[in-house]
Length: 281
Image (cartoon, rainbow, N blue to C red):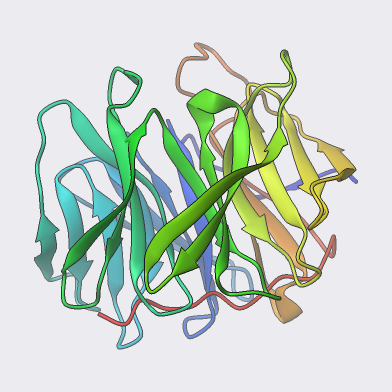
């Protein structure tokens, strides 16, 4: 299947696509461009919110507005754009990266160092009232997060520096067990963002691999989709019936990269997604 360009853009580091059912739109970010983008496929309308610092991810809130994983912590944006900190936790040389809303309505927010130093990042659960609970420490590049539709205590997690996708067993809001789910072979690129479909299969974007891969719940590779970009970053189902797979892409580190690098791509009708939970804060 050949992807289409949903939004022609020049994002330095496009990331974090999320379908916002309440707004009938896709939310995605340009981390290094300090921008939160939205795209409504029904109308073609796009909008951009410029923020004051690097933004790793933005997710819808149940009462309207957005929660964002920023350089210095997690912040809340009201529907009118008014900002307040949910958790202010600045660490020199570190920024927020990918994030996801858990089945319990909390935010799982990943961090990494700008120099990608090993063990410099982590994964934290942030409750709706802003209370943080460390989940995983000593992370290189905290990336994709998703949950099994068949077992809400089972999460999938990527630390890109390890080339692995792991499963996490979550009990009472804490990680009790971590196991390898899939490992990318040398030369295949690095696992980045992911999404889980209605069959419980895991779709993973391969940074420097130019592909999407789908793995069964048992960890077997059962589908590969080649993309016209070297650095796809993440994917999410959206659109009518959640059957279209949107893919964010990056230009950073690729001087003179041709289109569609930096654009938002879509693979229409490729599968069946799951509704995304909104943050309860």
